[in-house]
Image (cartoon, rainbow over all chains, first blue to last red):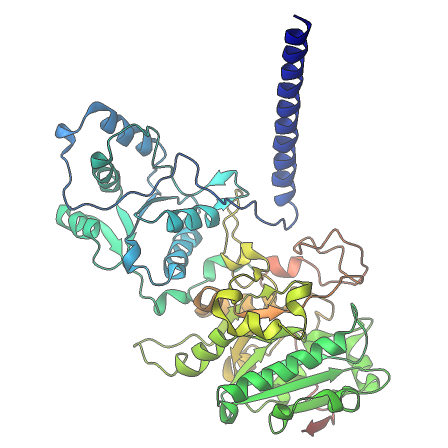
Length: 213
Length: 309
């Protein structure tokens, strides 16, 4: 009996220690965030994708909305909640990305001109998604890449369709050359798809960065 | 005409510990990488010795220079009596020194690198095989800016730093300095860290562009922010090139301590460290200034000694 009580108390103590540590870590992050708004503060890097961000293979076969199960449709609705009129689609087929900085530069151009812009990234590469997620956020607190996964129980076969239906709701896109979804979006019509020129993209009209006199 | 003049400003002191040693590494490495790539006909390295109060750099470092510096390196000496007439109470007016470098250079492109910063192979490849060499049907911008990576203390050791420059896998392992600027990161208050706002790897300005803008503003005689101010003036009028992303920060800063830092400069990660060096007002980043330089900016009327090695 005594042994049981001791174990229980020890376990409660451990829980409080862990909770205490978590609270301290949270407060440290908050302090660092506050400091980052006043002083140059190094980025809080994202080294691992959280479950809201996942890379999915592309597919040429897209399910129509009416043929998709309810959870898949709910997923589209959830993703769309984070998409605004300023959101851009980013379609990156990994085998066509020879230099990710080309796309980062293009996304920079978007944000320089429209500071409310965020991005819905569709890619088959976890590495690319992680890098973009790490770069396009502020101190691991304010995120400019829209989450793409809320329900991880949805069958894989619907993921490509979910991504494409979400892209369909956006008017402006950045894409790797001749991507499957880019061609599909063009067929729909009324969509702007930019394929960055890998040489020209690093030329910046930086007038929007220049302070006023 | 040479295509590129690397401008390095320094002096014979021990700023933040053995600054002369770091400068020698920089100059030696610059000449080595130029010769290694067989581009010496297109390049020169100009060391501006600004205000060495004891032994001038040309006398202090010659014995420590590698043979590759022969025919490539020139040292411009600005003695204290001249420097002090221009720099007021600043201990080291970089803007004047850089403008002196411009006045004395032969190249088409002014390429400012810090006296403790090493040139990378990707930059050499880009400059000599891409920039203005390939015609893509649009004019290449006349001004470019590249951020840098910071070698840590072991990586900076003279026995290994070349590995981190030439080995492309190792190169990416060196941490990017001021990475908000490298990625032009958007802040929650909707301000953007401009790619030309961080610590310089190289700032490259074409000769005519430099002249039209009258160079660095010679009122900004203290540390920091003068590059951003200059780039702001150029960017207000024409496109500028984000060389940071194009070559992925292919310049390498050698490690040193910061016992004489700039504690009032909140744009710097080491702002909270000790130090009392005066810095230019942060306002100059946030306002577009007219450059008040007189016509003889860059010490044009001074008789300066130039030593070719």
